Each structure stands twice: as structure tokens, then as C-alpha cells.
Length: 175
Image (cartoon, rainbow, N blue to C red; front, side):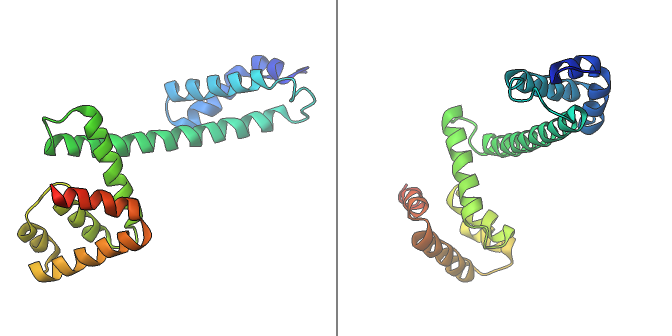
């Protein structure tokens, strides 16, 4: 029987690794998660010396670490896709400027979430990507006047609720 949580990890390493691999879907991520959990447990072993249910505690830690890893990978994938799309539009710009624009686009997306996705994308295409109003209106199935009115409403929403974004948008409009 294990005397400490570190002893339990050593004695049951294979079982914990198999559990981590099954949760993650691949060997490399399973090993990474288990190593991360073991390192955190090692740092906290004094606090955990009287832990009654080591197996349950460790499996919960592995599950939580797996969720964290999957969330981090999803965020990274979203950023990578946005960056690749940006590279197509701005191939000559420096990478730090690209990243700032990607962050700004993401911020606009989040702050305009109350509008439907197509309208948000069209707004960003028009103001950030400088797609002509005719093309944007056609993609929405609206007239130029209707599109202009919708964009004006979105700008006013930003002005009322998110002044910093409105100021950045104003700078873009003046360029």
C-alpha cells in the first residue's frame, strides 16, 4: 500500500498513464498531462500527505489537466487559423503587427457577439480587410444603403458600450 501520493504515482504509473492516454486520445498528450500532474503533485506533496483517496484525486487531476490542454489547443488552433487568414490578406506586414490585428479582430468578434456571425464577418471584412462595400453588401444579400445602416448601428453600439474599440475603429476609418 502506498505511503504518500508520490509513492502511489510510482506504484501505479502505468495505470495512470493508460488513463491519461485514453482521455487525451494519443500517447504524447497523455504523457504530457501525467507529467504535468506529477510535477504539480510533487510541489504540493506536503499538503497532500494525508490524502485518503489517492487514485480518485489523481484521476480527477488528470481529467482536469486534459481539459486544460484541450482548451489551450483549441485556443491555439483558433489563433493559428485567424493568423493564417490574416497572412493571406497582409502578406508584407510584420508578424507582431499581424498578431495585434488578429487580437483586434478577435476582440471585435467578441464585443459584437450580439450581431449574427455573417454581419460580424462582413463588418470586419469591410473595416479591417477593406473589402469594397458592394461586395460586402452582396455577400449579405442587402443593398449598399441597408449595409451602411447596419454598420452604422454596429459602430454606435461599439461607441456606447466599448469606447476603446470605437476609437480604434475610428482610426481605421481615417486611414
